[in-house]
Image 1 (cartoon, rainbow, N blue to C red):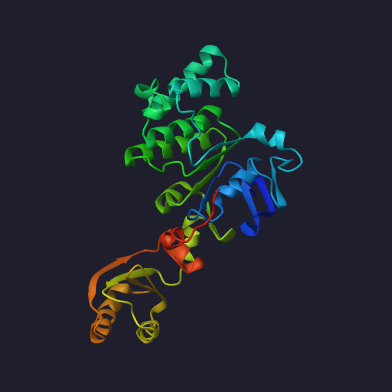
Image 2: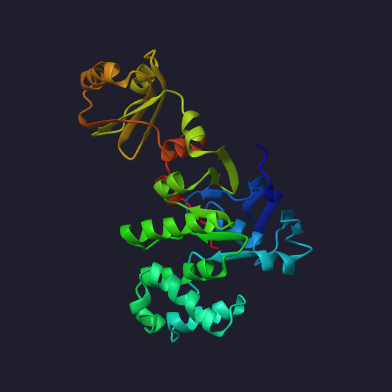
Length: 324
């Protein structure tokens, strides 16, 4: 079945001085999907989203959203798109009730209708009892709930969530994920920018992995995992860096398709992990490398990220330098 393109991004690029934050991105996002933009802080996620919402102008390239060009028709784009920012935008003396009722009226709700939709959303987000607290009295998680509440009130054709569950507890995360799915079921196309692997995995119809301003991989979570050579991942925590010659011996094992090492863990992507494990451990021990623990599992999106970028998302997080 052919999917209708909601957003067509062509050569989208942003420089800050000499720093290239977003590097000629080409991407189609389909109507009614939850599209996960997965990458660490500093990868270019937020800059990309701010261009799509016309907050900042691209240096090169553009995007067409429901037929409107973000450069030539920004007013039309703003009528159909909404964004919950990574950092909540709250004036410190206002209350959640004041902020959201005002926002509801801006979105076109009238009097009683505005108050009803605000109450409904605050209830779902477990924020009703905190509705009259001043913004400076709210925890980070509560402020985040107020920020994303704006999108659940607006219900735009295109809804962009930038790190929607950062600072949110586990129970709150699950409620927000359910509300995002509900928003999609009501007709919104969702862009979910996140550095949380599990969040991207369970919510996204497709995932675009963004690294150093470029899309490094694109596909459904299951399709991306299938790109990892070898059906199993064998993780072995060791007491020191494994020398290159030993890694070469591990890679020479017929069932092993790839070996990587990071965070004190050596990872083997292979078939028949259960059968190969004893010989792998024996090899390491014979080379006087102490094995601290062993774990066998299926590939994850972190393995996908590592496969396409050469580092884990945690390692990439530590190297980010994006300032927006």
